[in-house]
Length: 191
Image (cartoon, rainbow, N blue to C red; front, side, top):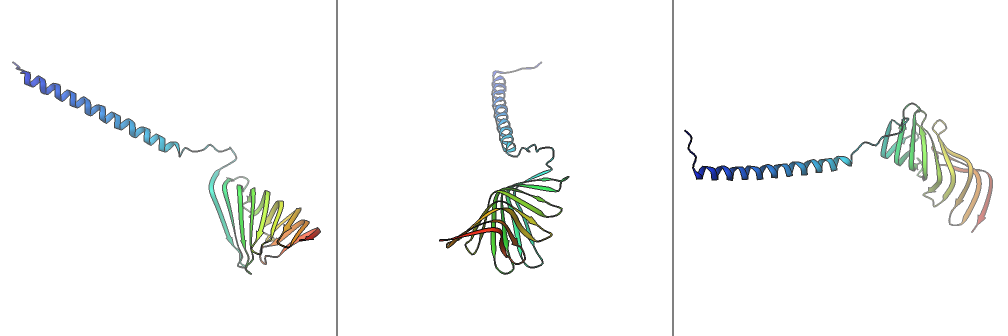
């Protein structure tokens, strides 16, 4: 025969209350942890890319050093890569060219693209080229041919410096020497 005293009942009741409180506390901690983890993961959710895009890179950087000693670097806020087309597409492009004779050109544009198999580049939209000599060139678009090692455009170009403004059509910038030429219809205005 089982004998229970009032004291045994009180202990069981206390034990049950403590166990229930511990269980509730553990559940609150588990739910809090799950919510914290899911919030942390929501920041790392994979973005669904368009079908033709195989890769997207934030803070893209590409650097090349030529045999001649010149160095150029392409930076973009965002780049997408399409494998089938060997095409990288850039947002907010920044290109820096250091020639072996000390000339430095910085080129910026709203966007651009690179044929990765040929290393040919086109940048467009508010293209601005600045030199370490204080010249500023503006145009609609600028191309780079890796085979010819030159940046070029056939679009209208405006060059400004402290003393002169020059307008023309077309521009060529040779990577090896840093030589920059306006091609045709050149008009100058001395300040």
